[in-house]
Image 1 (tube, rainbow over the protein chains, first blue to last red):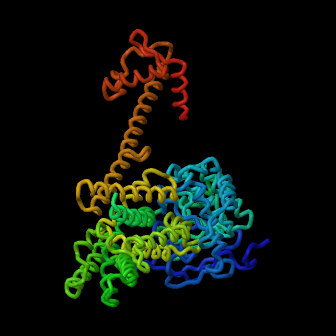
Image 2: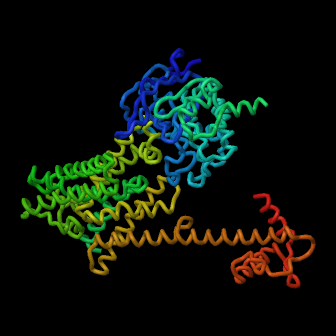
Length: 258
Length: 366
């Protein structure tokens, strides 16, 4: 079953020749990337590799020097509603005067369009999403009272309300507790099981093989992308991180085999 | 209360209410000082528009003023985007420049026109009622009440139409643009609304004190509520109260009305800042004291619990280096005794069943 505006043959995300610069500094250089539908993909790379820039550029949030983005075969502008975005938790002011359920409701604003206000239906939907992330009891809580993990669950719930087919997450596990991390992974895997596509900026190389099927290794340019077992190796990591990582996937795999 | 006094307060209330509404969003967007820039830059627009139409009461002046407010914001952001200058410095570069151009034009070409620099800075709300709105020979009240009233309506419409858009783009700008709202557009609409408000308010309170009416009431409200709609509502309440009480303070002390309105705003903030139930300074201090006492009680209970082998802890808790002073130690012991969590017999401290339970719960991290 394909949802609204999905092209069954086109990849969920196709990035061609993407180049982005801030001032005179090139942040992304000539990225070509295809994300197949129904896959769970990690974006890894050292600090300043352009991971967040990639996620934002896919949604046209940043001006690009060059490049074409398509979602399910059509331009992002036409497919906006197919994409759900979870920004970095730290990018917003959590002292903003609003409640958990109202924050989650923002996920329905895109469907509502300009001026129309959320009503009962949107409220129910928000509560449903909160239940999914196990935060229902916090619905009326002020958002400043949440822990890091709870904040991340609220952000995920807001994305779930959007009922999109492509999920872009910027460091969803940054500074969250272990229980939250497990809960988020479970939900993301469920989404992928239901044919959705998940692309997440990821930091912890130790958990890549456990959480994701595919990976894109980035350092301004795209170092490698593909199935985790094919491209997640020390050669590619060395290319991306230089000497700055002591993580060797082969060693870990060997340990697991023993 | 004379009709004149009534009129002044009417204008003041409308000004204060119109200022507080967009003010709530400016404060949340960390753009309070943009008000400073806007309220000064509008003078240039007023003067240029005046040269164009040669009429001080033309509505073109308001449009010119709003346009120069938006121009100031765009220039500040352009300077800032160049990354050659920091944000606060770009504010400090742009608006004094625009304002100075206005002052030069004013002193060179408009000496005989009634826009004097003193009332630009401080306003003169006491004169507001003299300019009447006369409709077919009937006195309909002060003109500024109508001008400012229209601006208030504009603000109310803007906030109620775009409440959701303002909320999401203030809270999470990149998310807002990812769902197709245009935060830049909203931003400039808000700036235009603030400019209109400043133009209207500027006549009454001048370009410096308008900042007080835009920034302070929302800051008071922010410390008192967790909901955006309540914050806006409370801002308006604070603004209006400051307007009325400011008027009477001025009346009583025989001083400038705008000045005493802004002064009352400041006093309101001081009171809220100190006394707000959860976020006020005293509230925070009380909470800190409570946490310190809580921790001290729990550590004494746990230490008693750990050493509890049927025997009492003979020495005073203070001598075991647990607390910073004997006074504090006896206070902790006193509190625990009062709660029935320890008993003191023959100079020794014993846990009661209740105290044992709390110690156990503390150890389990509950």
